[in-house]
Image 1: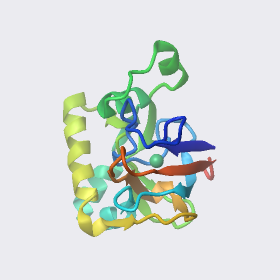
Image 2 (image 1 turned 180 degrees about the horizontal axis):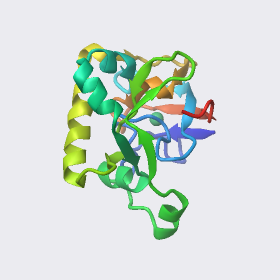
Image 3 (image 1 turned 120 degrees about the vertical axis):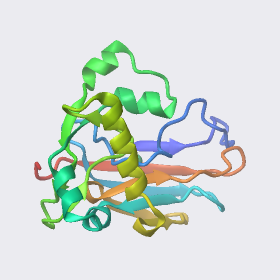
Length: 200
Ligand SMILES: [Fe+2]
């Protein structure tokens, strides 16, 4: 279980020393061979204003594309990289040892959900570039697709209340934490993941 907290040892709200990347759209642990299937998040302390968890529906984003665009994306494979994700978010760069423990991993850009049979984009901030495409070109394509797929009409926001428990399906959603006043508001959440599930 992870504890997500902005409190210092005295319980005082404190801005984190380094960005965590949770404010960027992502799907949990897509940089691993067995990404999180479901994530559970429980609210211990929640801000009165801001700090919502936002979800973007990757089924809806895929379904709204033209057939030609769907087929184009269906054929692509994406390199997900923990190192690139940390560099993008401004976090401390991983050590060589950490990089060896979490090497880049390939996932199809569009995956068919094993439970629903529906197709969804599998992208987000851990997605580094596209296999077999020049890196800069792949990153532009990923950025454009992310912008498209996280438009307001694909998004819902969960405003936290104490003791809320969220459970979400990572293969069909991107999520991120909204900003809040980190030096005034307390935000403490407990998180755990359900790994694995059917391979796809
Ligand atoms: Fe997350």
